[in-house]
Image (cartoon, rainbow, N blue to C red; front, side):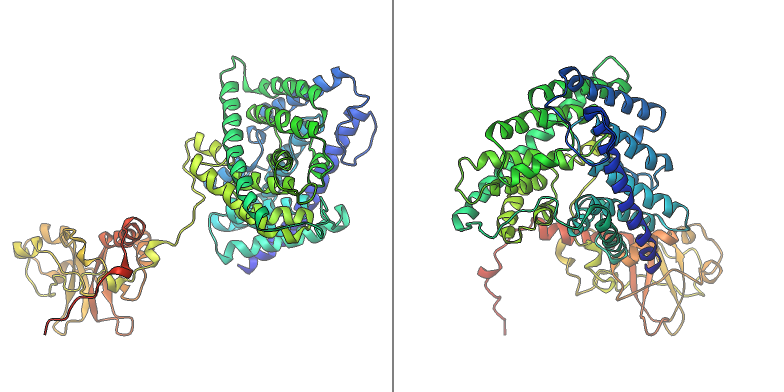
Length: 585
């Protein structure tokens, strides 16, 4: 684990540098196209003096370049990057091609710089993950260790983009790691911390969207309306997700190669830019106006309608770009619109709440949805409203949609993905709670074949077995321990050996070095042992006196943990009203 943490530190530093380069590249392309100047500062597309034909054709040209890069470079650069990162973890053992680390940021810079309505964070997450994966592939590591380094790079990229280290770690845990263990959490934290430190001299250490929250007028009534705001966020998740994948299905029906889809979408984006120019590009300036209360009603309505439409249509075409900034903008616009009817707190407050509900509902990352707005704004005293709103949006989204906008694409590719975590039921039960306590045994000198009754008998379960009353039939014994005259374990023989043996003794067939388990092992330990040694049964021995056999466990008992988990999930009871049994004297 220490080696992986040490490797994560340079990955964090490189990811911060990659983030800075990509943001500068986006700024350079934006300045070249819309301002006709050579500068690299991140700016919004200039719409005051830009001719309509440029507004219309710039996203189209950018989409065409991205399509060509995807077809002749790597198809993995299509989309916003997060599903691709998840798929690399689940399917490709956390291996990403080196060319993706080059093509993804360039294609994203071309797409965003030409006015397409995306954020930089998705490509940075994918590129940071590629950096971590490439380094890990050059070392002698396991797939889980590669995953830790790949996710470290991805989270470090997000931290460098938004100066949000805690939210980046939470996003890694909620979306990418698929586990909660020190072996992965600590490298991710180390990479994020290093990335945040390196970011400071490159991009500054101030919050991205500073908000003065000292005069927020919070009260219980505001908290109640946060529930309503969360419900709006859940409904927004339904609309946005359906719109995105309607767009994806519509493009799939076009009678042209997918290489041309981004260009077609770019033309639609240009039309949207003629209606609401500020819907184009990254839109960080629009988010700032929304959560500081400077946005006008026309801007709010324009962003909510135009941005949602052109973002979903463009992303459905496979154009390269991130989803986080557009979702932040759409959610903030919905919240700003709510501010016209909800109780007045402070200009921009409801936009901030809407931003959180969009992350909780659309992306279905409830913890990230709470911490991320706090780190973006440093408005620490709105923690409770953010908690209420994001949890409500998350809950409603889970009721209305089987998957989030981030994982639906993976499911459409034929892969099952769950973001829910639970205690492994095999970690709950110990061997001595489910083992057979009195299995049939043999002696080394016994002649074969054995009596027919031995091969058809069943064996007993322990008296302390918590699942003994489930009424399930007991299986036939498939492995027979061999004991000496002092009842010490000498070996084992299998049922198949006994059936096929004639004229031999047990000692002739006995396996003298069998796989054994201990009575205090968990069922998870047994499952791992069975899988590693390709066996389905094992004698249970005492940990202190290894020759003393206590029982027998088979693969059937591994289901007991799952049965207990199902019983706790489905069986309803009222323990408080249960009367104790009367003792019979």
